[in-house]
Image (cartoon, rainbow, N blue to C red; front, side, top):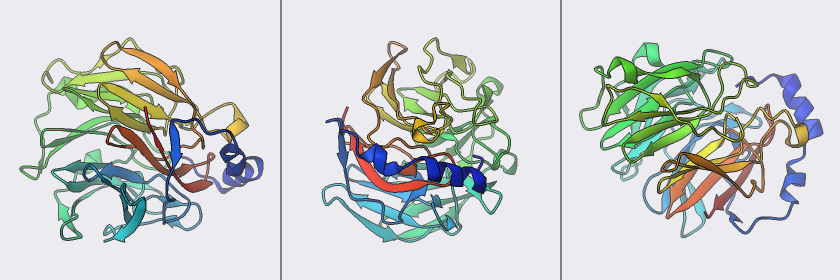
Length: 332
């Protein structure tokens, strides 16, 4: 994501998060305890279990990339800080398998370069352990993530700020601790480069929704699908297209439906280049439907599903550095 200071100052002067909050709140949304790190975006988030989620790294509105990790307790509506990641990171690729949190690469440093370094966090010991790095040629952040059995799948992503949108597909076997090297050629790459897309796994299929190809303005509406039980067939393009082409939106899967919230690259500057749209994709009927818009439009967040509800912590309130510590939950 491009992050020039001049752009951030422009949006800071022309957009007020308070104005968005002043709107009437749809009954589907509920406000929760704010993120303790403060205004944050481009972080990763995942559910550790049925009642706890974790957020990792990200960008503060002021202060740059961080290494902080926080866990949210749903019943208590409370956060706690736990062991920090060994490096500062943003756009991290996060997934949970058997109650352990995996960070499989991401972006780091002043230039937001893709890093292949990977770790696993054990909540029982509050410790991070280094694991096999992603192949160096596949290092990236903002990948679409999904867990199938013991294997974490990653599709698409970005190599660095202002860098290449990739077609790469990677897979890490948490049981063996190794990256898969025998992914069939047709499954190894999505049909066209994407970054800041959304998606995940529904049933046996990995979905890649939207995102952009290169520039923020080059937003895409495509839905790419890979059947993990038929890798030789490779990726196909679904007929159903996103009604609002976006990138940087939050994604949550409930049952057979994929929910999408917000995003960036909006040519309508009402919300500082951010989308308020919320839309849901039915993977069974291959169709889309509109939902009540976000109470606080934003991008660069992450959605976490627990108990059939979709939790969305933080995010960017305009293109550039403006961000929020706001945390809310959507009930489908």
